[in-house]
Image 1: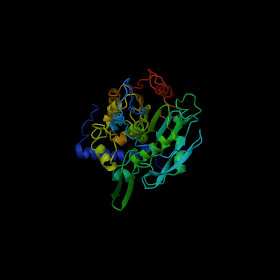
Image 2: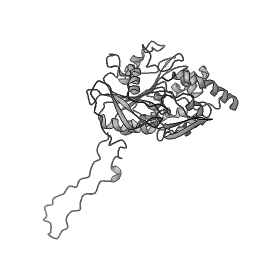
Image 3: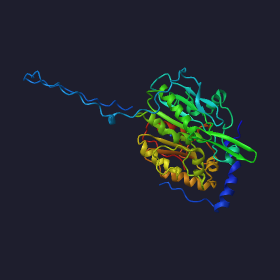
Image 4: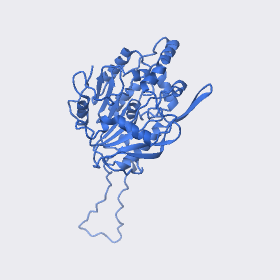
Length: 399
């Protein structure tokens, strides 16, 4: 069993702090804060009769013009997947040969379909840290990068997401949805496309940062399986929260014309300290959403990108104000500095982006039992009900 993520990141947090201090005397720079189309009409020709007889030598009318290729919708890059057959209202493990973990071996996903073909689809990306250099990849800050992740691992992790997957909880706004669980075993926030070997002295590890291709493979299978959901929720926690955020636009591409919303638990796009973001991007060959201007240099730019790219979508971010796990991950180690950056994210949020913050330094709200309540007295389930139902009362909650 892996050590808890907060403990593993804590092991390297002091090293990061000393390194940053030695190299720059402090944190360098302040990041700016500036988850179906109708078929094209085919032209027709209408023959017009005249009262005057046409001479026998008259040529036939010209054929109708061919449809303009520019009018046709582009092919769906996620079409052609194999549909998944699984019984309703129970979990089934689905092995996938094209879902490759960090050690190069395949894994799979778990699904729990609803009885209705038009039920909402909720896809959850699992978390479990990240690694991008020798220190982090050999230091154990990423789960499952060296192990096989089989059916027992995946089905065991499903139980950790009970708050979203509980069909018996009347207050759960997602209880009637079709559920999909995506495991995490690539150390790249579900968004890398590279194979790297990290070494120190006689110790080394090769990591297949295959998260982006895994996400593509999952979306392709799900599109073939769930063709007419009433809505799609792309969700995740911790590293999976980042994964949901990086991959939500894939779902919108796969289901054009369908509503796709994002629920991110403790994966805030706070720009990491120093050159950490550049190192992550280089090690993983991080596949940022296409057209995300500025995201290469500032992780927080993904918020305005999503607001512009998916204007009908709702984006919900949950977090603790001084989340110690994400502080260690981003290198923003001083609690108040982290809280200030979290509040800056909230201040920059788009019109359909709302945040639920709870005071403290814990990590992942949806695993709490009972679920947290905001400082204003609103239970998280009630806030999520407003999120899911398009309630205009849905708003920021917390300190």
